[in-house]
Image 1: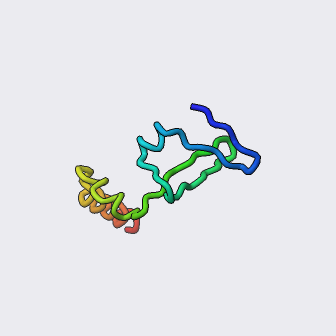
Image 2: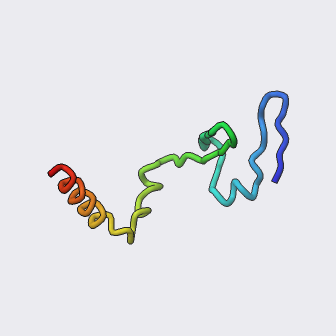
Image 3: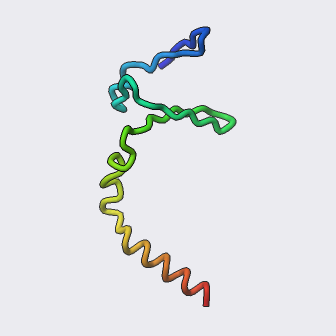
Length: 76
């Protein structure tokens, strides 16, 4: 997809992308410039709600306990 930048520095987010990521009027976007590329990332209105359930099935408690055990062994 390709868009044009106006003389005011504005551009349009293609409808297909807006629909896929649920971007609506008033939503915020973060522009990330790593020096080689630019990424545009939508920011959820409620970031905590957006993350809810994202770690399901990852055995996070067991992973945390294993990491703490490794840290204890290194400190000895």
